[in-house]
Length: 315
Image (cartoon, rainbow, N blue to C red; front, side, top):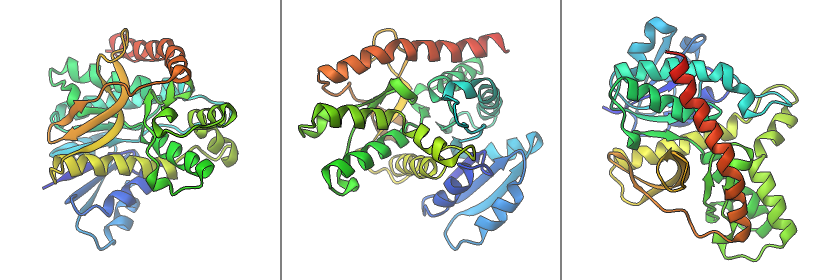
């Protein structure tokens, strides 16, 4: 049995994410949890003629049922951004939500893989890690910050410039998952971009979320593309851990010591039956990308520290 729990399943990301996961034949049970409206989403998805059984859970009293026996726990729960808001502006609300859900996961499915989508990922991943440490069940190989949307955007935006199929464009995006901490390694493509192309692409990849927030005009943030990216990451994790497919790689924000002074950093990770099987070193960076990394480090340090302090000051 392969159970995947989606926490925040009735939300703007959670619904399309759950729909996409319903299509994966490796999943036998899709457990949907939220504080409201879960029953309707679960009933709707349960009519789709794919392998997985869909179960719905609502509120704190049913959180244990959603989590028990889970192989993967995906957390898109939280409030969306509105125009003028940064991911950090979401912190006060989303940090508390993630802490509550992580505490339940540490109690009821301590061996599950956790895929954290709730923003700001640069801080919420450390929050989850600290909670698992407090419960004595911490395994850094099993906790992932989902930065896949940055990779998805990079391949799409670059393909528009190169006039190629985005499925054939693989751009590593390292660092974190917010603004200047997002570092697209465009030099890895071997293409000679003009300085203007490089600057425009880098900025658009870093701030693509703002583009969507502005276009939705107060009606939300990137939900559909985030759901697609989240499903891609979960599907990769299932391929590696359940189907035991070798060589599955994704860029993801995990615990490592690649950059001095940073406990967490997104880089290329090879996934396996135990989670993060191999953390690859930082790809070769040109001078421009080295400058991006230098700028990203202090912001990442502050976000990581913020997450750790939140858990320590809110027992």
